Amino acid sequence: MNISQTSIYHLVDSRDSGGIESHILELSSWLISHDIKSEVVFLNDYGTHPLKDQLDKAGVAWSIKGRWSDLMKKMKINNGLLATHGYKAGIFGRLMAKLYKVPVVSTYHSGDLGKGKLYIYSKLDDLTAGIADQVFCVSKEIQQRLPVKSNLIANFTQLCEPPKKLGSKIAFVGRLSQEKGPDSFVHIASEALLRVNTKLSKEQICLYGQGPMQNELSEHYPEEWFAGFSKMSDHWHDIGLLCITSRYEGLPLVALEAMAHGIPVMSFNVGALPQLISEGKDGWIIEDQDHLAFIESLVKWSQFNEEQRWTFTKNTQQKIQTQFSSDTLIPRILSIYKQVVQ
Image (cartoon, rainbow, N blue to C red):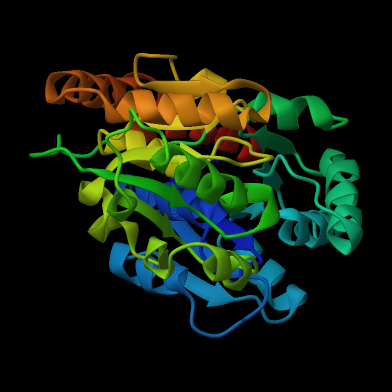
């Protein structure tokens, strides 16, 4: 069967936007633009959702699952391939696909197994990976964790136009939750501001996102630092440096998006970020969750002149274009899809 005769159904359980949702949007949009039928299926309906609006704008169909039997029947009629994303969609999607004899592939995005109930779901997701016909992982760390053979495919993004001017904000972009380390970011930023040799100002610091740590952090740090949930396409031009202070990661799409816009990334050594960032060329890798080293690197960045910053901008976009663009990596995913449906 030719892949053009196949419909790709991306199954996800999602309450808000994050890396998985950005991955699905980019992948399904690319498939549609290359005349391959694609639809996003939400495992549960949690009401209004940014991804639904983004899919509408991109011309990608989406639906709410309903009964499993109805979804599987629809897939068989349309020569469907099920692509699961995230632990709940992965566990239930793989089981149902095998029960109804529908081809299924699963993508593993998260480097954090979580705690409590989330840990149980995550371990079950890992242990049932072998049910899928093919498995994708976005980082070596995730790949090494799984008990099955898998395909290492990094996250990807579209290259943007070169910026007309340099941004000045030092930004954290992501969910304000423990694994993403927003507490580390505000601590590092506040300490960097106290250095006598810094050229930073408190007006430059900004956190884009929301989450369970927001109230706690805003009580101890300036309220104007917290921008809340934001459509980042409206803000990338304001940002001069993206800081990733996560405790766990795969390959965060926010880092790729920043670099696609010409923004260097300063990050702790987590997940696949060392494979993305070339130290001192398009960003910086800080070892061992070392806050002091992060502060010193942030102060050093503040002392760069405009020419030095433009060099980083050029290097970041070149890295995305040659190694992490949608046009480079999605055809590799498509080749695995073809193997499965054939």
